[in-house]
Image (cartoon, rainbow, N blue to C red; front, side, top):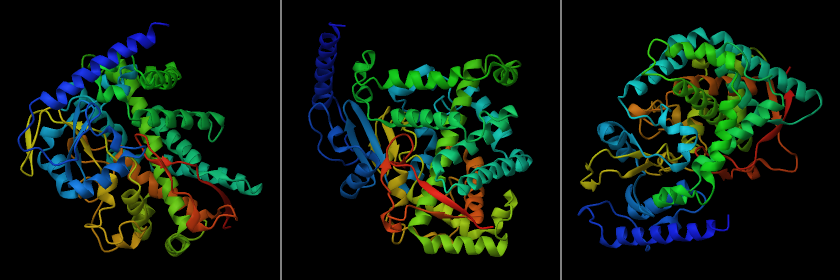
Length: 481
């Protein structure tokens, strides 16, 4: 152990020499996008801060929506406009469809088996996408699971009623995470993965939160790859532990059922692919959906007139306290506007997942070198005042006269990304979020701490792979009937 500081210094010195050489003597494209002047060695790392999506949005106001940065040794392209996003995610999707893989996602060999990071077009990628589509996200599959969705939402409402008897508060993020988790486990395993709303559900959500935070942390290894061997911040070591706990906790009998999928095509789909597929679904699926519902409830509590309008629509169309079915959502246009507005101003993954250019490519006349990391700032695009009037205000009405949708075709609003790499869980999310939100609103009035004024309700963010509330939303349900 006493040699570790010495070894670290040697590696760091080597990294500094290589970085300095890279910045001052390496060849540069003659027409690269604009950006701030980099510092020696660290480039622009000092400009990111603890909320990189916000810092990058501010830099884009000065340097433009197509911006070049040097993060240590890594050349990075930052996209901050709908027009540029369409170029990257649709028009030249193939040139930008490779993934830049952060070091932390090598934990448990995750990136070697996840559909999110496998190379597009490989047999494994095609097989996993087919499984997602056929068994999770097709309209036919989701229509067949309407009863399941309804049952799990009813369990959520029953839990909230129980809490209301004792005037107990409800952690919206945790309970909606448990609901989503059990919907997914029933779709795959035909059973609940956990007893509804018990302590294991809380532990699982905390574990998922840690994975998302570690996955989004700025990591020196990503900027100075030579440091990979020593993992100086311990990020990959912690991620190995968190991911390993989830993977090891799976029930062998459940896995045996799912492993049958690979029997006919063992070279295309291994047991590791399936285990990581479960991790993708349970971690990404539960965290993004529950986080969106928590943000929506927060914004409604901050804007009582909007909540009142949503309740009025529910009373008129559904009836107070009545069960809401999946097909009812189509008759609730204002509720759908609330969901879109939440995804606009609080996109679950603010910088989407990083991409990488597979070859040198031109974007709006600029030369983008091969191997460039590409960040699409969905958070900045959703708040772009050139696109959205009163862009920082929560105004669901803006969507009543707009056809803009979240499904990856309208680049003003891309919370799920777009192109070949669009989130495979999007179809389930766009059904789950409004159904759960509508059910919570139609069965209860929700009260925050009487000492807090609605406008003072906390909106601070905790940055990770997903944007979550820095402080969980605890509210007290009061039954309407």
